[in-house]
Image 1 (cartoon, rainbow, N blue to C red):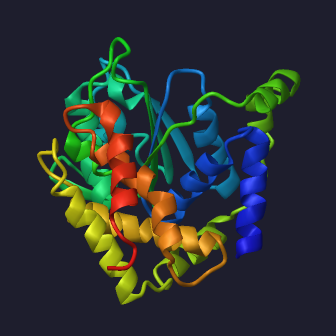
Image 2 (cartoon, rainbow, N blue to C red):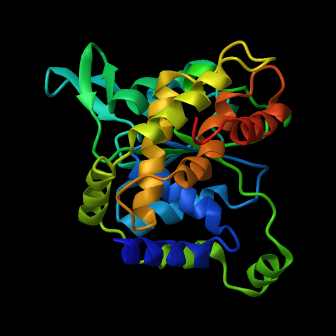
Length: 303
């Protein structure tokens, strides 16, 4: 499976140049059955990465452009009376897809943002008194512009907590940017991607994640990270139990990507910033990365 994962990463790296770590974290989120938030300024490749992930897995894909006038029914779908059928007929929205790109999610109102909560947590939506299951696997990739940019609404904590990971792409290094300037249009390259990680392969890998073992000593390390986050000065609350479960699931997926069937502390440390930073942004967003690094440097791996 490691050979398959390396080939998948290599193909994605041909589309998104110089972002190997972010590509691996995005795949890790998919294998861990989590959802991914990509935050950066416009034009950094957020949508390109999202589209490439969908293409490389062969999963069905829908893009929703979030705007301030977008309604929940534009996301979830709606029921309309059909005169011929003599009954209400449900018209599914774009959320009924295996990969959903919520593009610029923080440009929509909080009401529309919250329409995704049930879908992301339970893989279903409740409309007109009926619960409708979503296709599996179900993977939400949301892109977000920095909150200091105009026309944005901050994501509430309940929404942020539904995302297993948040990654930032950042500017490319000079070598990667030169290759980007000299190369072919990224959209054309993305459209030519052949599925590398097919749905059956993905299902096998996702099932394999749950079989990756974590020793009692490693679980102790995870618990210490959670406990210390809850006692950090300047925070009203620390990492939730859901965050702890997500951290462990992401570390298992990361270990599997390395070809191992057991979790090491290195796996926890590799995914911890992406899992924890967006959950520790209370009060001062600029301090979340500092808080995460403080936890990693002060919490002992072995007590």
